[in-house]
Image (cartoon, rainbow, N blue to C red; front, side):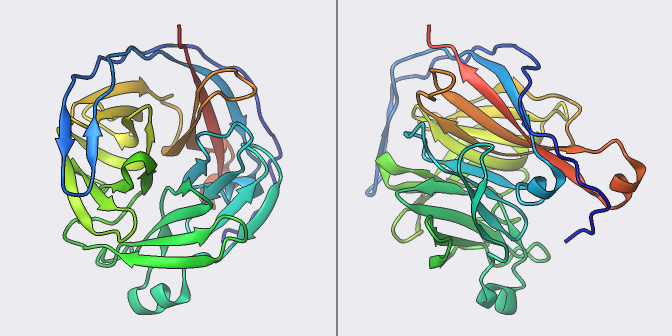
Length: 309
């Protein structure tokens, strides 16, 4: 943990920009395996607008450096954040911390595999799904299940390193199909599909555009959304993937003054905005020589709203 020489204490909320992006319609098709079926939805057009930015203090940011998750269907959901080694449960997006597992990587994984990095997490049915990797060798990608109440370990599953060539940057759940999705980090040409009960690889979705630097992923409205640190234009971006065809659309170009984009989450019919929202976790440098030397950075959440008209 870094030694902090000061604390930046700014919290939330300035409306900083507005823009939109139109998403092409999906085609009608069905994809089936023995374990699950995916059916595409009626063609729609999405327009997302950046509505608000929530900025965290340095201390808060230290616990919010990797991932974000919440109950997509509950406007009053708790939020969960991951950092390199920790998981924190909060009252709301920028609410008080309710519970903290500061050393969340199980001792067994640290001892046997030198596991040392948590990626972007997901929440479903009172369980936090946490991807954990050994960042030196990337030979032991794990998904560890935590109780969402007390943040204790419930179960853990080892994935094949052959399917996760450079680690496991995120995990996301598709409850309607009883599957989980993830991919490798760089040179991504497919999304791996795992059975939610056993975490056995049952399928993969080949995508039509190679994406690099994937940091997070979530399912929303029967599509898959990814955050990435780089693309062919070296921009931070959010992508939408059609789960049937594998077609990829760059949905949003993120601000070019952030240092990293991390995970993302969605809420349906949010109380405050009266519509669906997408929260994107990002990291910024502090304009201070001492802070930069110590690599002290701040986290922020970019909140986008969807226009359903």
